[in-house]
Length: 60
Image (tube, rainbow, N blue to C red):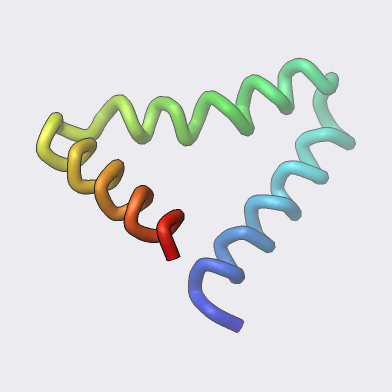
């Protein structure tokens, strides 16, 4: 199992646990808010690099 697959599986597990313990809107807010907050903490050069890498991956 690759590193990214492990991260994705962990994210799904955390999301399911949050859905059980919290109302659906609170779980959705956390699931969408954490990656958004992480992206916003990057400086502009890191954001450009991330977008460039993402576009290269999509072009495969």
